[in-house]
Image (cartoon, rainbow, N blue to C red; front, side, top):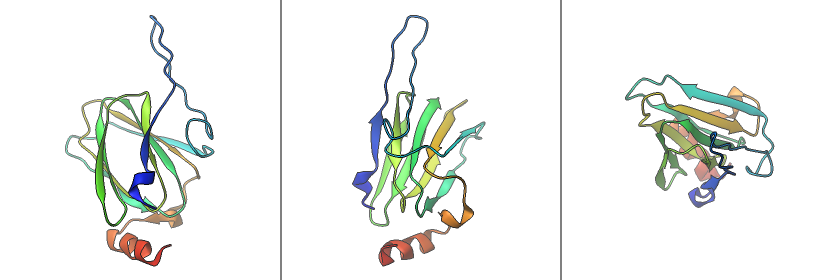
Length: 137
C-alpha cells in the first residue's frame, strides 16, 4: 500500500463551555468497522512502541492526551506524523511499518483496529516486512 494512502482524519469536535466532545464512529469517521480498541499509557521517556506492520488489519491512532510521533514506512518512503490533538487521528493501512516514539509526559495513545488481535497478522521483523512488500502480499 502506498504511504500516501495513510493520512490524518479530522474528527467531529463539539465545542461547549463545559468542555469539548469528540466521537468516532466506525465506517463513518474511520473507513472500517471497529473490532478492537486498545491504548498505550505510562510510556517511559525515550521508549519506542510498535515496530511492526500488520498484514490485513487497518488502524486509526489518536493522541487522546499529550503527544507522540508516528513514523510510517511503506518499504520505500518514511514519513513522521506528530499527533498532539484528540480531535484528529492517523489512518494506517495494512502493510505499513509503524513506530511510535517521542512520547510526552502523561500521553495516551488510543488505537482503533479493524480486527481482533491475531499474532499471525504481524510482521515483527523489518526484513520480513520488506520481503512481503516486494512480493506484493
